[in-house]
Image 1 (cartoon, one colour):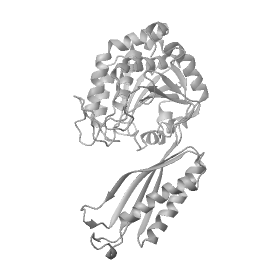
Image 2 (cartoon, rainbow, N blue to C red):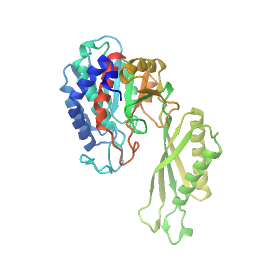
Image 3 (cartoon, rainbow, N blue to C red):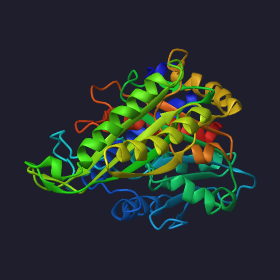
Image 4 (cartoon, rainbow, N blue to C red):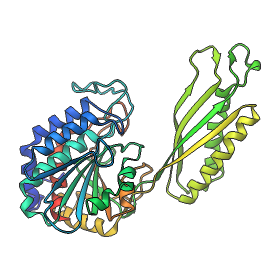
Length: 396
């Protein structure tokens, strides 16, 4: 994060405006953090966002477009031509929080472990700052608070319901805080930034029985174990090792008693890859291997493979605009280009496949990564992040 002396005059003014509301942003972030909600259930979160947006002078507020919990703020709706969209996700994840913060999640098994609490507070701060400078806007600014960013395809629902056409979105930008990158630095990449991201569900059926008499059963736990190992082996033996691909299984359900072999096991996982050809191959192999392995052990298995997200593809001209606008804001050393894309999935891809878009990462430099139960964000970055989002609204 540069010293104020390195900021452009406009950037310095916006940062000053954002610092004037830093306590408000901190309160918003902590409020969001304390009451996390899952995808498509962000009712409390949406009501709080609406309340703040409606208090901002010059802000037009639209709620419930295509998704009941979606919230949209519009500045300078009188300006003709395509708008720029600034977007933040709203939903939390199903993780039990272990941060010990005094404003920890009040919802058992849920937390804002991906930074969306900070993203929303930052975008609300940007909205307030932009309102102060709305007479300088060259185009309409559409602020999208998007539900269901964590694997449920909220962006897909909006795109399918003609959100981009309805609000005449000409370009889109989204900022994500990233703990593994240095504090306060902005990271970009031309072209592909994130991976294809899919969901895998394998339903395995056997014959239940007493754990002391496994020969009288068909053990679906053993079958599931063989399927998981076989898939990991397939990835290392049937795919060129220079081709990035990951399959991870993070959710397993099996039985209710330690001494009973269950009838059914369900496992859920995800695929991440950069090549559509690799995705096609892995999907086909999983769909053929799982039933075959189950059959070999006298059981049954079925595969439900869901193609979730495409790749976020950053528009080169948009990246050039960010660099031109951002260097005066961050300084020469404050913006860097990522050498390789991320294996993370991101539903901003539904926007980037339709309009010129840029997805960028801002480093937080903290110990725990996204989705960790001890994940946290540095609240000191809220003002800087809000000022940067306002700066984009005024300069892109």
